Image 1 (cartoon, protein in one colour):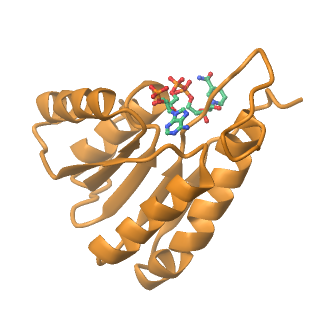
Image 2 (cartoon, rainbow, N blue to C red):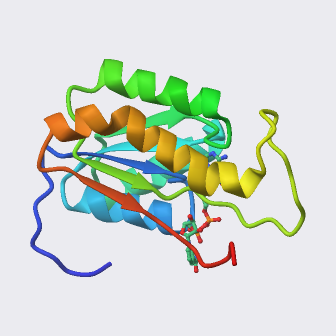
Length: 150
Ligand SMILES: NC(=O)c1ccc[n+]([C@@H]2O[C@H](COP(=O)([O-])OP(=O)(O)OC[C@H]3O[C@@H](n4cnc5c(N)ncnc54)[C@H](OP(=O)(O)O)[C@@H]3O)[C@@H](O)[C@H]2O)c1
């Protein structure tokens, strides 16, 4: 983790796909800077393991775990409803969750899986949380991207 003097105390930060890889490290970094975290994971056990790991490595326990399968737009809508209802502010939205599949796979809603996870879900989640982000200004939206679609 890079040294930085940025203080994120009092800032609420949401990370999708926060139970492994870049999302988990990002969440740890934000926790270490003092942020309140919302981890969005699809698997409750993997999410809880990540929550415990972040607490163990940073000592910060202001961490909520929300369960959502962001390949499904119905789940994205439920997630956004929950955040808009339960959190007074949202300062950082990090659309990180991603998949890399070697075979074409459709979601139960009929969308190609990678298109749903990497394009539709970040667009819909951002759109549904935009008013809260604006009201929490200064706020930031960070989208993790990949060249793999080419
Ligand atoms: N690593 C790289 O070199 C690289 C390069 C360019 C771009 N990126 C981008 O960076 C982001 C993170 O990559 P990474 O390497 O850290 O990947 P990773 O280790 O495979 O982590 C991906 C995370 O996304 C979650 N996820 C996948 N599908 C989901 C769904 N439907 N609903 C909720 N969560 C879901 C995974 O949860 P599960 O554990 O439940 O599967 C996991 O926590 C991705 O968007 C990727 O495209 C990575």
